[in-house]
Every structure is written in C-alpha cells, then in structure tokens.
Image (cartoon, rainbow, N blue to C red; front, side):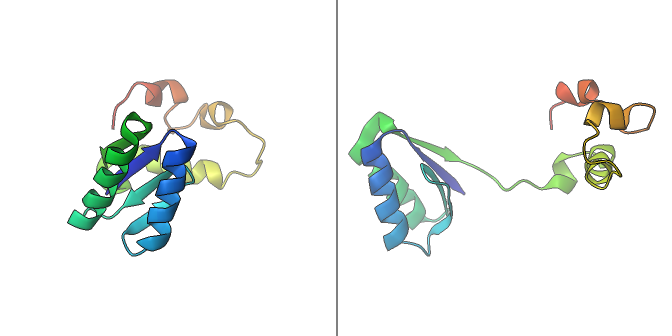
Length: 112
C-alpha cells in the first residue's frame, strides 16, 4: 500500500478531494493521511498530490502487518492474555510479573 501524509491545510483539502473522487483506490483515510492501493492509479494520485504540494506531502510504501510472521508466539499470547485479564486496571508490568509472559523491558529493544 501507499501511505500519503499531508502537512498543510491545502494538501489536506486536496487529499480529501482525491479520496472522495477515487474512493475505489483509497484503502483507508485518517484525516491528514490515507492509504492508497498499490496500483498505478494509486501511485499517480499520490505523485500528483506531491507534485502540487511539494514538501507538504510525504509518500511511503508500506506492507500489511502479518502478526504470525512478524511477532513471536509468546508476545501474541501475552497480548491476548492481558486483554482477557480479570482486573482491567492491572498494568501490564504487574500482570506479567511471575509469569512466562515477556516483560516490557524484554520486548522494548527486540525488533520485529
């Protein structure tokens, strides 16, 4: 997918107009940003926006997040267990203490 991020009011207005006109190419819109399908039309629209607004538009190519390829099983299990905890106010650090779940410190520096 193509991520388009706008940094000015004029660029946001143009992005909004493009999204309304070409909604079949827009995967998701986030106000000042949008994801376009990775097609020639998506690239054309993104480049057109950048040509019009220059540095007020940032373009990035992204790839979908596949949790089963990118994240280890212990981290996926910890996220699920934490969301299903008995006490919603328990912070994760306390929840993970004394369990096999990874601590925030262990996860902080591990890249995906």
